[in-house]
Structures are given as C-alpha cells and as structure tokens.
Image (cartoon, rainbow, N blue to C red; front, side, top):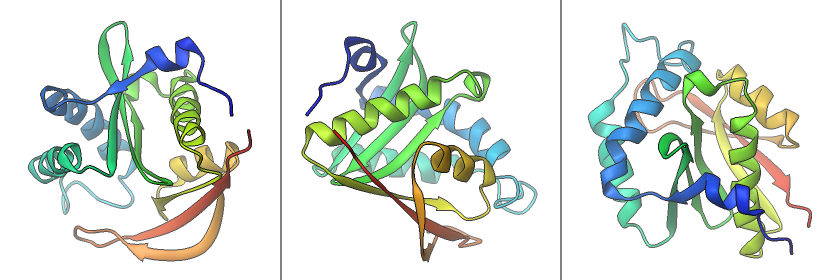
Length: 166
C-alpha cells in the first residue's frame, strides 16, 4: 500500500464541529450551481439547516470520517467516508477547474487504500452531469443501480464503483 504524499496529507484534515459553517459556506454555492437541474432553487432551495444537522450527526458517527479540504489555512472543500463509500466530496466553486477537486479526490482514495479498501463506491444524482463527468474521468463506473435522495424531490441517485489499485 502506498501512503499519501505529505502535500496530500496537508490538503485534508479531520473536520471538527467548528468547521460546519465554513463547510456549508462552501457546499451551498456548489450545490445551487451544480445541482440546479436536480433541485431548482425556486422549488427546492438549499436546505442549509438540514445539511448542517446532517454534518453534525456525521461528525458524531463512529463509522463516518468527515474531512475538510484546506488551502492556505482556509476551508475550501469537504469529504466524508464511511467504510468503502465516498459519501461526500465538494470543492468551493471558485476552485472548480483548477485541479483541486482531483487532488482532494486522490487524497481521499489514498485514505481508503490505507484502510485496506480495494473497491470503493459512491452515489451521484443522475441529473448531476458535472459530477458524473468528473467521476467517470477519474475511473469510476456507473453500475446501473439506483436509489433516491433523502429530501424532496427525492431525485434519483446512481451508484458508481471503482477499483482502488495500489
């Protein structure tokens, strides 16, 4: 198994409760912009309070590893892992297209590999074309299995999987 490089390690740190507001400040613009086709804001505005409660619950869950992406001592992204699942990954809109999301992705996968995970999975809203292109470019494959999101409009989620080569 390979260990993450020091720059990858420096990119991520464990999330703490005091980070939740910063994470929401990163997550909300990305969700509004990236999920506009899934959650039209006039019908389904970003549920900041609900998402904040979910992050706080995840922080307390012993099987969830919540992380923040830090650049120049500022929270610019987030990730969460549970066992072999990549639960969440997001980068501040102002960093889209810079390669930071791929660096964070690679650092998160290195953490999974270090835990002995050989195959990981995630779900993406089927209508989130940007995220689907991102994950597919990085070697994730849709399995065809679907579920539905936990909040209205209960949009379809598509499962992706990826082998984690050493």
